[in-house]
Length: 168
Image 1 (cartoon, one colour):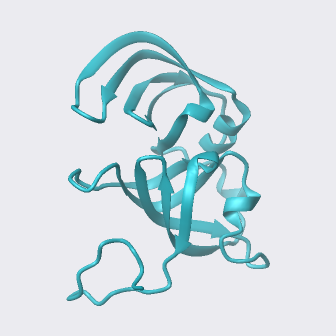
Image 2: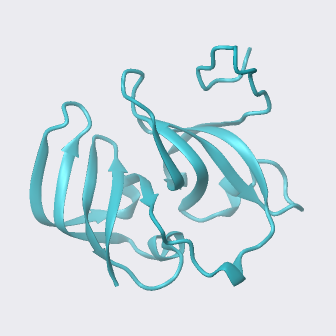
């Protein structure tokens, strides 16, 4: 099935259509070594310049983030999980969102347990301090590209400034 896909690499956003099998997007992407985008465009993160490239083959490991739109998989296969609010540094991106783990595993276990791309829900991300945040209901994060991670056990009151980092 061909569908529109938006993926974020180190220095650009890749948009286009990709032929993908049925099932959860994370499962499908984790099985592939390359994603072939058709009707593809690249948008530079530095200056927003866009280039249409037609067909483009991208190694999965070169992608940092993939937006998930409407493809949630089979609800009957979902397991009960515990959400953990985290901050992840993924290349030039800072991602804040919820990791999910089985109740019988240690905190942050999703980063060691899942293969390649890890789903993060209620995700907010940006690629620089002067760039507006983006929100995605589900964002796939390339686990191999995560440089730092920490749980958010502290939640500020609405009157406190919040920069995304826990207090010292």
